[in-house]
Image 1 (cartoon, one colour):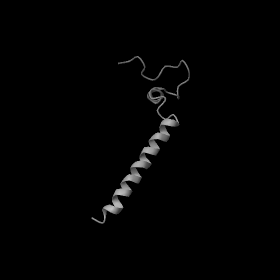
Image 2 (tube, rainbow, N blue to C red):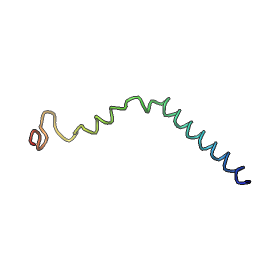
Image 3 (cartoon, one colour):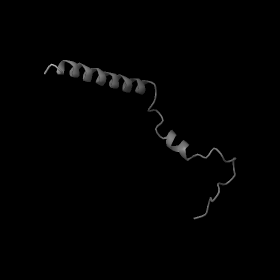
Image 4 (cartoon, rainbow, N blue to C red):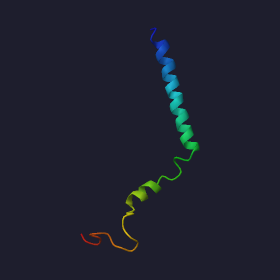
Length: 59
């Protein structure tokens, strides 16, 4: 029972730290552009503009 005196405050502290980190990420704009990263993954920066990718158009 005495261990609860350590575990309950530790759990509350960690929970508040997690909540604080989440609130900080909301205020700093971490969730503003959810689709941008998905589109950037598909972009191929190694190709010159107008140059087709190897195998483009073939199935």
